[in-house]
Length: 416
Image 1 (cartoon, rainbow, N blue to C red):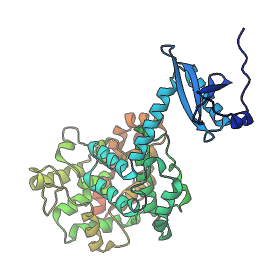
Image 2: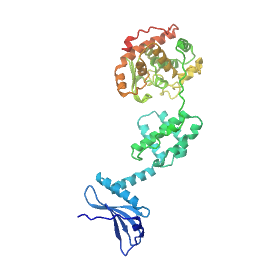
Image 3: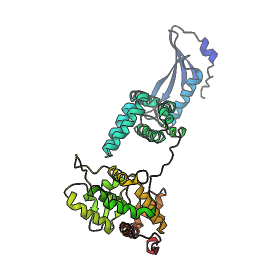
Image 4: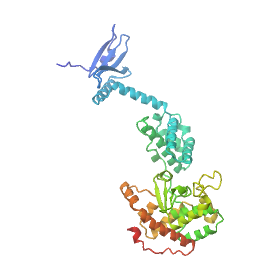
């Protein structure tokens, strides 16, 4: 018959006196209080290790620092671990090690490891330096030396509040994203259990969406004629027309490399790392875009980039702001920017009745529906070719000043 143990009481423990030698008081289920001859009282848990069934002891701390209720809670947690085949002593040692590692891992040291990881992934050096600089200015002065497991939402929010007060909402959003990347990196590395900063963006004002300036579709002929006579470098004009014809972003357009062009199939295959959404993007090249390549071939065919920089280092691509500066000098300041050419193309193609899904695919906008996204990528290439061929002819006619926006809407073949 099993021996019945009467649970201890706080009064019993408090009034227990030391004796000439150590003795113990049992509370049941392996928990007992060791009363030392020097008067100290230590909680201990007696159990069998789940792997080898060897008896072992683990200390839960001293009384009264650890109360009876707290000791029982530790005992119950230990018994639950044993049921799962986990040795409480080993679990305690692992938790202590993680705690010490977290204390030794400051937010700054974790940011350095995150930065190294991002660098090894092949992200653009310019982008990474810009991200690190924003952390140096807005984050490190406040939480640089805080252990990563002690970085709280309120500390981080206070650090970013000056930015928010100065209406730098877009900057706040970007910095929050970088901070969260570092925190989630720490989670994935096992340094911390969770990210307490996941929702800090919600407390700040949302940045106002500001559309890129663009012109009315009816103004395209005038723009093309102005571009034709503008006092700008030939390669700059080619870069602007290339972006217009391919419907790409400014950085994507000037970053084009000769090795990315499939001349046999009239395709431009942009690697994932160069795209905003980090997905490979294939663009069908109409005859007008191919003509731009023919113009650029004797200029830069011996170089890596189709539109190389016009100043050292000549191995770099043209600066993505070059097109904007040229467009501004052409008299379009405040009316049109290079990125606005994409909106212009989208407006015209939608007005002409092209399938919005095909237009979005051509713009490299990622569908949020993963199944539909996979289907679109598999079927839209040839439909985009037809649409971009039409677009190239439209732009060419605009350059001659004889474009009618009522146009030919017989586009059934594209939308099937």
